[in-house]
Image (cartoon, rainbow, N blue to C red; front, side):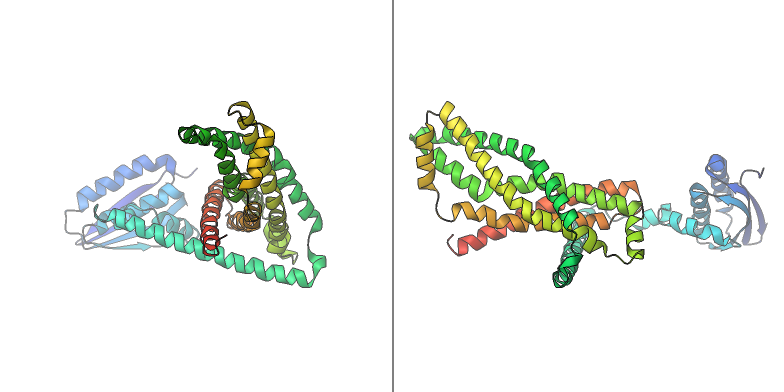
Length: 379
């Protein structure tokens, strides 16, 4: 069995020749690290102008061993010596390149004065945000082009997958959407009546609940639930297929992953989110009616009469009109992050979390844009 790694040093005037031998692995890292430090102390102060490191004798190398090779080079490079790496095996070069990204010298080079670090961080976050925004827009364009191609050839659309995703994103979500909407309706009615009681206007709790739920709360609550439930599932499912190389196999067979995986999910959420929004609105109003009848002394006939007088023609449709756009946003973000997954389990979890955050963020941005648009048209 090959021996553990070691270093032989030979001095020739202002030049130093180092020869590496053996197995540079994590098992012998401690001894190698001590040897590197000792060489740095012994030779670093002796006016060494040139250092040659001969790696022909390295029989095995892992990540720690590659890092130690870099550490050996940096130890003499810091003292101004010209360091060269010779006879390094070609099969070890990718490992050395990977270790070089996380070398101590690279980390030191990335350091900034402490006063500038917040500005650097803000700049990096801004660049990352713009990159992500451009990526989402680019993927939206790709989906739109693919959708136009499917419209020209309707037989290519996956109807079975479409119906399956409607069941998974719509029917299966009814319990959680209904329960949360019912409870939020109770909370809004109770808290609103508690404040309106000071003015003797408890009856206007019905107005607050009806307008708030139908215009904003119902669709927002539904979109957030769907983003956390279905958007994350889209990313995890497609990401797992990416890890298992199923998407590569799909491309090899001549199938378009956007057409096969993205379009059925996009169409399903485009259909189910308005229906779930209608259901959430209904359950929220039922929750408000329950608390008004039991705690506020507003009977059901009076509740319905006040509700009918409070709601205008557009009150019901505003939330419904926004919901397809929210559904499309959630589906595009979830599928895009799934296709971005690399072949590691860590990236699946990271991008699944990112998909939920991005979806909720974009839904709120879209909702604010719709609010400005409706206010402009006095709706």
